[in-house]
Length: 304
Ligand SMILES: Cc1cc2nc3c(=O)[nH]c(=O)nc-3n(C[C@H](O)[C@H](O)[C@H](O)COP(=O)(O)O)c2cc1C
Image 1 (cartoon, rainbow, N blue to C red):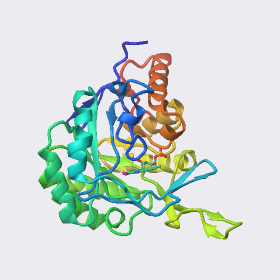
Image 2 (image 1 turned 120 degrees about the horizontal axis):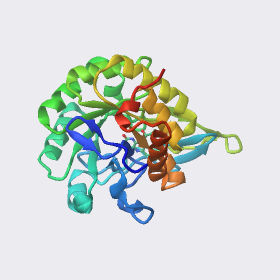
Image 3 (image 1 turned 30 degrees about the horizontal axis):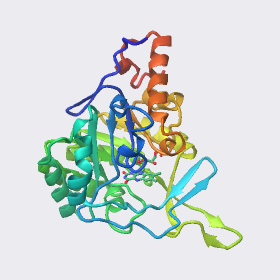
Image 4 (image 1 turned 90 degrees about the vertical axis):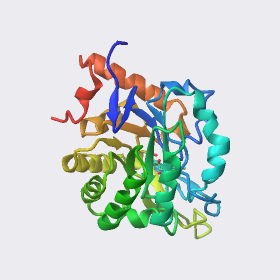
């Protein structure tokens, strides 16, 4: 069972396996090191980074709902300088890929950040977030307009030689069109989906459950929709897809792979069971063995 080839290529990166932990749900990695050996993951994506530190939205910022959570963290992060100084050194000795999730408020900020990360050793790839629903400006504006997304990706593409992954928003009518636009702009891969705009109300207080009123829904509740979106995108583009949205166990991950994802990300599940990534990895390995498939890559898009 141990000799199955789990490797997969995303741009210039060769992942040892397709299991990646998603931005915002795995802290900066070190918070999870007591639970398992982080080197077993295909890649780690820390919390999204902006040029300047951000305080995030007013509390409460997470609300548990049926089949998922709604969060309105608002991209709280220490900013580029602090990240490089105090967070990046931790990854130096890790033997897995580090993918940096980043975002800006303007095209200039996206380009500036891409250039800075490009000149920083120890980073394998950039995941460009054009899809956060929890901030007033930035991200999502670019993520819902195909022309703007194309222009932004083209500008960032010119600023970096690192593998460029563009993270798409599900809050659009036609996600395949968005994927085509960023592919044309020069993305090496797309990752999808980010969270769905959502809200919850407390009927006793008659107030919204979140300080920001609106947040982003993630977890099992979004899986069928996310899966449909990955399938649609896989019909539309030739670049690799990293699929996510409600993956809690190996069977969920395999569904995403069958509809065309080359790799998958674990998000909300990390908050429920910090070992989900490793359990999903083992489950994929078992599935391949049981089905006598000796290369993981043969499973990608194998939907009948
Ligand atoms: C608490 C929380 C924080 C998040 N922060 C980020 C972030 O900083 N950048 C980003 O691109 N996505 C962020 N996300 C979105 C996740 O990476 C992922 O795309 C989404 O939750 C869907 O996957 P899931 O259903 O497996 O959680 C966050 C999600 C949650 C729940």
